[in-house]
Length: 428
Image (cartoon, rainbow, N blue to C red; front, side):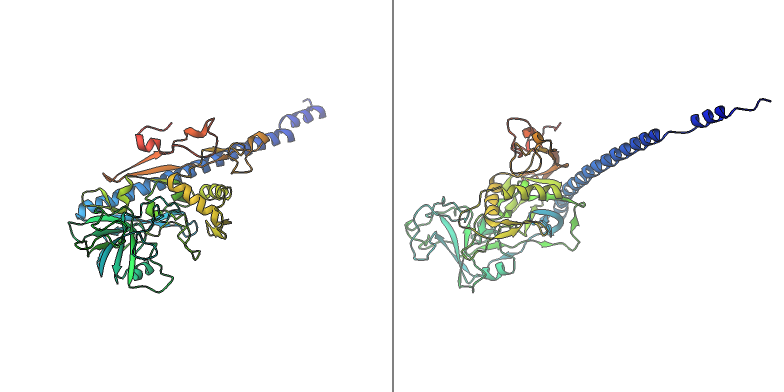
């Protein structure tokens, strides 16, 4: 038998193994595949979280409507602000009908800010939005004689957007109120005043130069609709790291923060603690939210909301003569109050919804994403819209319209984000 030579054994051993380079290539390929898999899983997980939150909101609103129809009395949903992001909703609860308050007697008046009995000159800033564009000769002030409104506001039961019916009973008309003339930081007065968001239907029977609108025969009673109470159940939270971004949503004006500060430096620069949607026994929306017509809830990733919004607000032009800082989020950076006020004014008429991809060279408010300098654009995670039609109570969900991603409108902000929700068209 022939004995194998040494060279044959060496060649055979070499052919049966792998070189170091081959091993490194295989490990590199496996690492790339693993990275791509993890990224795909994370991307799908982010999408699923937002979709799950969207369906949860839709189900909750539809559930409140069904409860109202079944019980044959009003039911609703209250949205709760997040404890760390003060401009976002992260929880909801069912609520039942409100109670009514009718203490004291009232007198309807025209605008007379210094209480000298004479109507102020035109125009005037009646609603306190920083713009003097209201007619002071309109009947807009409800003066109550010891009505208990100061105590209600101090307890958090009286706030902007509540409804008052004048006169009391089925013959009266409902009006939304503004409470800025009731100052709970000072001692209460016997006469307390509410502002009607729209003028009283009857212009009065006195000269428009007189603050008191009626010499005789005017209404003296009223009923104030207090906020609903929460039903005995725990609030339902949205999936982790998903929110309703209120600055990007189309919600009632009474929910939104103010744009001015009181003389003492105080003011409501955050969203209302009482954001309620009430359904009647017929299934339509009633109360203050009904006046909005269509409500769009913008559902998105929490970190996208915080990161982009703080960058945008920092870039705003400050309001002259207003100093100080405030937080958007518990762990966020302090922001200039004057810039926050400017941002509040912007989102009362528009919405802050960023485009899917943001580039610094086109949207200067976001730094660090200049693609012309080799940096990657900012990529927004998934987002959806939940739409409530208040006249019917119907609820639907839609993708965000991202048409303004294309030139020449490169500013980082969507122009018509609710197109699919309002037209029924399908997003691509």
